[in-house]
Picture 1: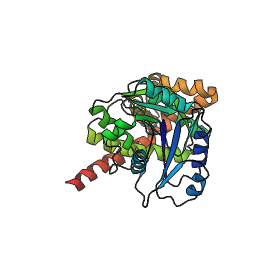
Picture 2 (picture 1 turned 60 degrees about the horizontal axis):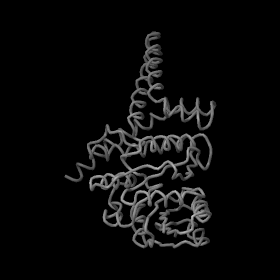
Picture 3 (picture 1 turned 180 degrees about the vertical axis):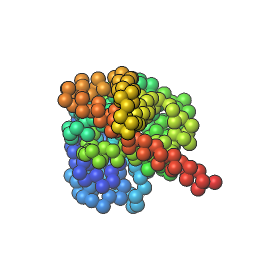
Picture 4 (picture 1 turned 90 degrees about the horizontal axis):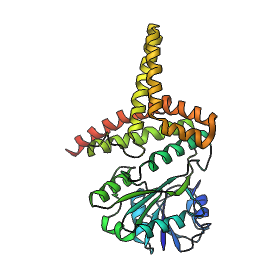
Length: 326
């Protein structure tokens, strides 16, 4: 029996698609628990159209509280956490059951399909990036809550997600806590959900900056900023450093009109492409040459800019938090 836990906060644009996909599953032994985190949109009316259990929170408490509430009220042997903007495939729950039967004492993670549900450039760029980053390591540093499989007993023993944590990354903190307790984490590339990003250029850059801000703050406190960790991979960190150097060398070339700077920039960019070849090959493999070229250029020269801004913001956030705590 699988209990699918879906936190929802003002997710009227996606929750219907999410639930429709769940109730189209081939697997039969499951329940769906939607915990509405004090939505002010039409989410409730949409959720009530489906035969799921709806739990409504009196006040906005965040995704961690919503997930913990759903887990507490669940009846299944295994919990499967997804988000309200995730769309399962017909065999996803079957794969979840197989993963749990094969390894009931570990926590198993899935990922996004390479192609996003809303297949526009920025959404599919993000989906390929996350799919590649999360699945490249079979023994991951964390399991993302957009596709997390965990036995109910393990979840209860762990104490669940930290409800007083940052606005995001509670799944990273939870995973690290599980690892310290000796629980094994693993990835299963067969467990995939399509994500609805609805990304534009602005939303893509804003998302990168927000994620980096909180990841930097958490990693500084955890003393693991340089770790190779999922989407915060060493590949990405080297890409950001190479991009900054490339932009600096280009500026020097424009100001000095010295071709040596331009040549140096081309060398740095080439080395970065070689180091990032795994992800860049995924861009080309998934969507072909036009997408691959555009995605590679975006990843190498534009995407790092909000990450730098987020890193600076996250560093300030970390020291402000320390000062407030002391």
